[in-house]
Amino acid sequence: MKIITWNVNGIRAALGKQALEWAFEQSPDALCLQEVKARPEQLTPEQSALLKLPFVWNAAERAGYSGVTTFYGNPPDEIVTGIGDPEFDVEGRVLQTRWGNLRLFNIYFPNGQRGHERVDYKLRFYARLLELCNSLHSKGEMIVITGDFNTAHMPIDLKNPKANEKTSGFMPEEREWVQNFLEAGFADAYRRLHPDRVQYTWWTYRLNARARGIGWRLDYFLVSESLMPKVRDVIVHEGVTGSDHCPVELDFAE
Image 1 (tube, one colour):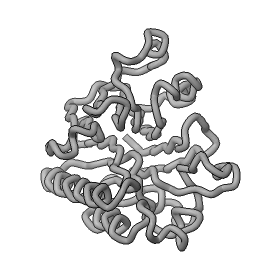
Image 2 (cartoon, rainbow, N blue to C red):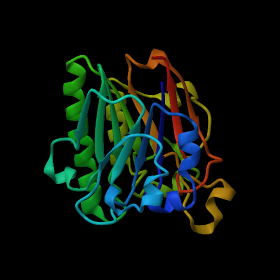
Image 3 (spheres, rainbow, N blue to C red):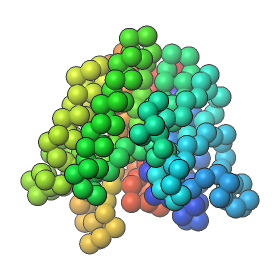
């Protein structure tokens, strides 16, 4: 099974750049896009024709903001929009799709860059999600959480950790919540397989950061420990352009 995640920073812009052609050519079983910034009815007929798989969509109430879309090959047994909390669900950040006892979360985690209030909001989001996942694990479900976490977990996950200790995305309280997931039955699949590899998935558009290798690893696959033995690889497609993020791929046995 192949799952690809990609923060496209605007699906209409990505379609205009033909960026999604690469993703559909990979024949993923699921393609999870974040920060789509649109509703499906806002796409032109020409843009809609470029979407090569069935999809589910969760748009924010606020126009042009946030939003996630999951494309799939086989129809899911269950589709859930959001995480059951109006505080977070109005921002269109979560889609859940379930096949049998495998549940896939496609998530655009909140960004804390707009002040302390948004950092608090981000941490509450992490807490609510973990509460939900603990409940699902107790029912025997296997879980894959993917998307833009807006947090780099460890110093290896960004180019300049020392300079960013007080920057949202690498603050201790944000990093602690990623660790909480790892201590609650999840594995960071990429880091488990590649403990010493340095790769990034996001680069600011400023200062030619991508060409200079100044980036952050913000896009993750957290998988239930029970699923980890089936994971074959996690591939960071850093050469694929079209957004300030690059796509990341999870391959695991059926």
